Length: 330
Image 1 (cartoon, rainbow, N blue to C red):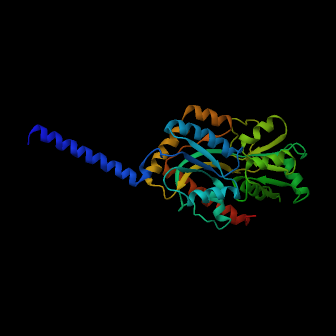
Image 2: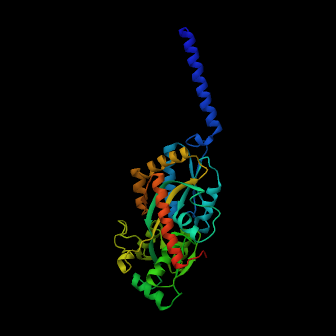
Image 3: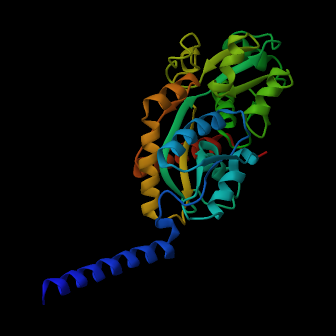
């Protein structure tokens, strides 16, 4: 075989290889990264809340990094369950991600029959952001400390209520956990997200709210809301003067809020792995860290396996509390 024949044969083989690769991508659009259409990041709460603020910051940088538009789609309702159901039943081509949250992923399954299984119908990608809640009351509530708040609730059981972002949400369970630990009977008032809950608190139509710091802090600074306690084991660096529930007579009290990235379980593993790489990259970006910190949010990137383990631990923990408190979806 002369050199010309060898060259022609090599060229032909290379062409076949390229055609084979092209046809495989055509047959499996999910193999293309980034997806060849705008990416949707679904958020289970109304615009203006903590989840929305974090999602928009992350989506912006993610879009810049991958060279594709990333659109935030707010799907409020049912404490975020509607958004989780939508993504679980939706496309598996990798173009739809979910900014999943503690409620629909690890609490709601213990409270109601869901049209999706968070462990079977959704696949973990990475942890997102973690933060404690802050218990706030409106300035007309007549209390300035946690002790005064508990005394008010005990003086007239059922007269003090608390807002949440929906039945089964982290803010709901934080309130129920405090009911248990303080031996009081606050009435739960569910809303469709943090923004409407905060609006009614500011309007003095509800007494209290275990709020996300990003949305509560501006109103704390203006004096419209009175902070009574934070729900982590230690005081956040951005709220050093607000004591924790734990240090005010309720040792060990902890109720964290978190958001993380998941997708439909129909999404191919290679696509999920690639999304993990890109999301972790964004969460580790210095500029993103600073932007999130300004909103009181702590980035928490993980491997896919690490987040799966964390999610199962949270699922077991909140399940025990739901059972012990005999909590039901309202």
